[in-house]
Every structure is written in structure tokens, then in C-alpha cells.
Image 1 (cartoon, helix red, strand yellow):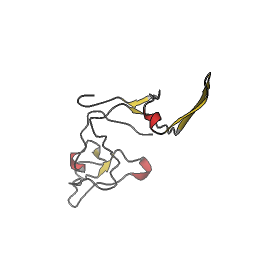
Image 2 (cartoon, helix red, strand yellow; image 1 turned 90 degrees about the vertical axis):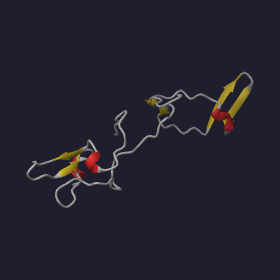
Image 3 (cartoon, helix red, strand yellow; image 1 turned 120 degrees about the horizontal axis):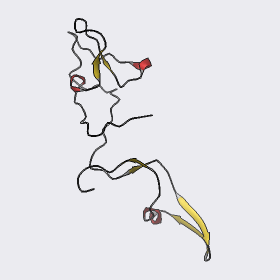
Image 4 (cartoon, one colour; image 1 turned 180 degrees about the vertical axis):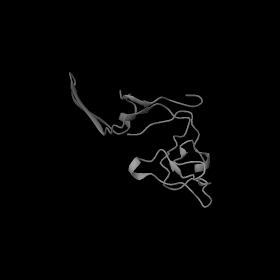
Length: 114
């Protein structure tokens, strides 16, 4: 399961991230990533006890570029088969692009000119 934090900018480093938290005290800081699972907590400390001044490769945050249209639940449809009064039909390829698929919205459209 994932969550989305709307309107949050992607941090460029751990020391600028709202999910970088001090797990101990100010006297003995131990910064951790609050997004990582409990079993896989990552310590985000450079020498001197300060959080990383960079964003590590394993950072669990993923940016969703904007603007974007409505994002829907993943459904892979390669063809639609149906039968009507005119007979049996198969719709596939470019014809599918013209169909509007009724799928639940996962993320509403966001950004300019949407």
C-alpha cells in the first residue's frame, strides 16, 4: 500500500525532508526515515550527527510529475469482444484508444490546463 502527500515538493536531501526525524534526543541525534517500514528503518546520519545533505538512491519517495490527467486503477485491456444484432465483433489496437474506459480514479487530475 502507498500513500500520496498532495502538494508536497520532492525534497532534494534528507535534511530538507519532513520525513527525516530525530529518533533519539538533541544531545544524541539519530535521524531516521519515517517513511521506511519499521523492519527496514534507515539511519540518515553523516559524520557529526547531521542528516544527509543529499537524497540517497534508496529514498522511498516517488515524484508524480504535474500536470497530469486523471490516473486510474491499472487495467490492461488488449481487446474487447462483444455480440450484437450485427454479429460478433472484436475491438483492438487503435480502436481501443477511442474508447472511454470506466475505471475508478486513483489520483485526480492536477496541474495547469487540466
